[in-house]
Length: 108
Image (cartoon, rainbow, N blue to C red; front, side):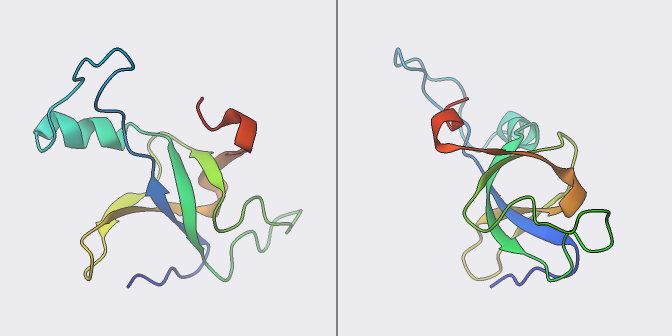
């Protein structure tokens, strides 16, 4: 289990589409291209929020909460794997959150 600390957020990156709406296979899983493509992803769901997120800024109001779909800076954070489940997660700084995506925008 991963427990996020400090001013960081734990994000589950949105899965990249593998098949187009027309049924064309876009990429083969497990290749180096697959890992490179996932790092270019900029969308994900907030899984955890550190206890000092958004502290010390001019406005200490949280920008997002656990469960929110967010857009984050393209080269933000670091991928890490949960030691129990081996699921990949991204750890980003609180100021790497660009926006929260509302229900009407999730397919953007």
